Image (cartoon, rainbow, N blue to C red; front, side, top):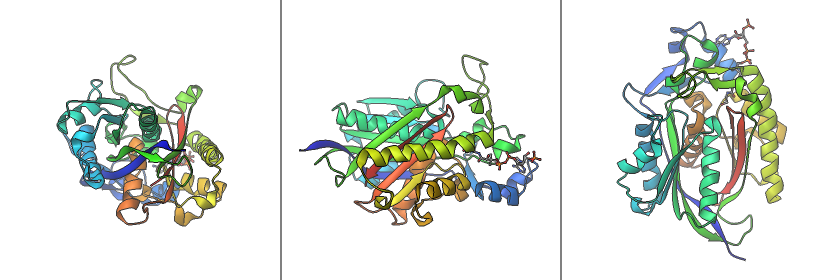
Length: 325
Ligand code: UT7
């Protein structure tokens, strides 16, 4: 039986030029390269230039994804952008990207699920496509997360970075089996009771300010490993696939130790884990598409490969998504 599938037709990414190393950070806060490396696996991160906006990063990534997919930009009928750091409180930064791409049709909107944002956005795109609402979607994760950091708080400012990643997702036909190209299954979760463990202490309706990231790192770590492993199990159970079937695991890049623990917990060999956290840090909603694009560019991810995505972030929000590229 034929069924509509959301096929990833191309991807792209962008990182701001400026690189901030752990040693650079050690000049700003009381930290060391050794501490950051040992606890997180992060060696450096990219920081957007003054005046460089989330929409600028997103546009670079979007153009790269459009070129990679080889589509005419006018084919895009939906832009879904995952971001926690919009240019303005409104309008949605996706509409700025829409205008910059020269598009005057279709829908463009932002999704706020912090670090899980891209997995949420891709799941929404899949749902739109399978419902006939969209034929070609541009899905972006873009952040200037450095603008939310308290640069006097060493427990958070060493962890994050800026960047953007994008995918073009097109409606295609499949047989309704796991051999199909496209998104095979997706599973989203949130638990608002845990808000205080990872949040920003400002916002338009509370303080009228943007605020700064506050986090109970150890608590987030503990929940992350359990939640991510459960979401992955859901994707495996829904498809009937096993861990051995996974060609590439492209997780949210928060901390090398979380990724190592997750891979071990589900029995995935380390060589199948795409890891960019050392060079990118945690770029929130941008981290999954940035990592995906890195593995696409260096030839690891190939047509037909089974790729497992997952993310976990503030809210808490978390989820997993399985696709055949
Ligand atoms: O995208 C999802 C959101 N975030 C995450 O997934 C992050 C999850 N959590 C983590 O990655 C880890 O918990 C951290 C990397 C944030 C922290 O690692 P940890 O092993 O849990 O360390 P800790 O918070 O228990 O702190 C250990 C010590 C503390 O000192 P004392 O109290 O033992 O004297 C901290 O004050 O390390 C100290 N510390 C630092 N030292 C040097 C905290 N930050 C730093 C720092 N440099 N940057």
